[in-house]
Amino acid sequence: QLQMQESGPGLIKPSETLSLTCTVSGGSISNSIYHWGWVRQAPGRGLEWIGSIDHSGKTNYNPSLKSRISISADAPTSHFYLTLTSVTAADTAIYYCARDLGGLGYYYLDVWGNGTRVTVAS
Amino acid sequence: SFDLTQPRSVSVALGQTAVIPCGGKNIGNKNVYWYLQRPGQAPVLVMYRDTIRPSGIPERFSGSNSENTATLTISRAQVEDEADYYCQVWDTTTVFGGGTHLTVL
Image 1 (cartoon, rainbow over the protein chains, first blue to last red):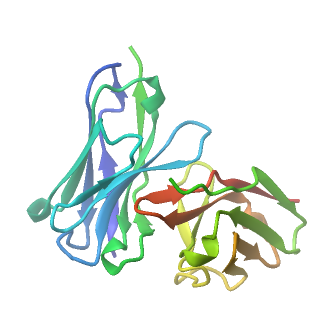
Image 2: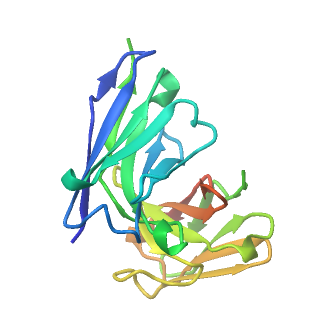
Image 3: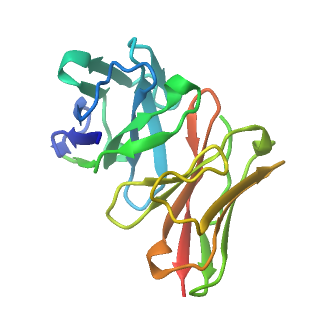
């Protein structure tokens, strides 16, 4: 059974770069059926899609974050990554990684990690 | 980007039917997906491609989608159904609705 686990710094200072890792176990991120995505949720707020990456490395980003984000993947280690630059307090959120069925043309998230909390504060 | 509108909250009496709408322009032409999220937990997919329940989701959950509104219906609502519910579509990017908190009274 596929499992996903996010990891990251927990606390980061304003203007710094946030780097998060998603570790996928029980499956390969090279499978063309799936994309691999990131979603975040600010305290007391709804879900915000950040972006995704497919098996070929093609990425798709939320236009509102596009200038600050980068998603990459390392298939041999079954890790994929999120980088978010120039963070502010508005980036404080729980960050989830998730599997996306985009390779089939149906873009939805069927497996989620438990999330990692990121706080931006000086 | 595509706008999805959900009511902030919906209430239902225990054992009755809850209806959670998700509005969007011509949403009936898109595949709609639904997630529930309990406090402190990750979202869980409860409906995909409008009407299909993933394995493990009770038959009490059903979905529909037509014209400008998609709907998640929960029959015989239980205490454990109390959660936040999000609709989602894809419109060159993934878009979530603002979420609806379901209270089971």
